[in-house]
Length: 274
Image 1 (cartoon, rainbow, N blue to C red):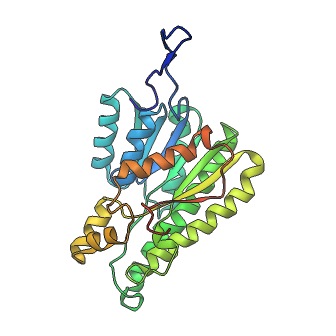
Image 2: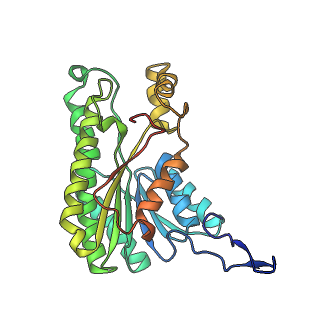
Image 3: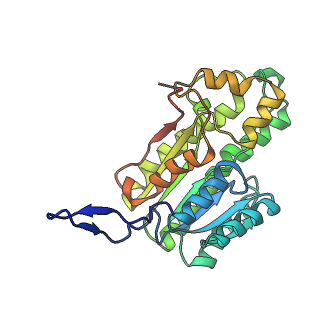
């Protein structure tokens, strides 16, 4: 189990000394996770639970949420789920409130939920698709952060939030222009929130994943064959990330081990933007 294995030390007489098991990164934390039914969000839910958190999973698809929740419970973790539509303000507020109802507090939140767009030039995207991407990828994190900050203030008093951005937010993005634009806006919201709420002891950071083997990436590759291969060719590590590798970065930023880190957009991209 990650973060819980004891360490073997050697005494002065070369006598092995086993230290007490180290606590997990998120021991005793209550964590709220959006987009938790699949991909990075599901990997984060599993990881956060392994690292000692009590987790509440949120997403739109109940069957996916239920499956991940049951998997976590079977492994000995504490988890529950709530169906949530990030484009619906009342749904978002109710989901965050549910974490407090279940566990009595909120310490950390991972705003990972997002929607993609049909890949292609900006002028070929419909207005309806534009509105949907903005509603979920920009307004959704704004709504979630507002609710999460209120819940942290009312319960834990101090805490941390991580938003999922994208390396596609850091440069021009001709294939996913509106997706990239919303993620760049999330970077700005993250920085503004960090400055605003830092004096209260609430840290806010973002991660910017590179090529990651999620359903969204595979859907893009199906529409534009060769996409994954092309992205890997631009990545110094030469491969895509597993969702758990991205979740590991989020876990660290939410943990007390990153206690002096706020307002950062952390690239987790295999060197793509180096």
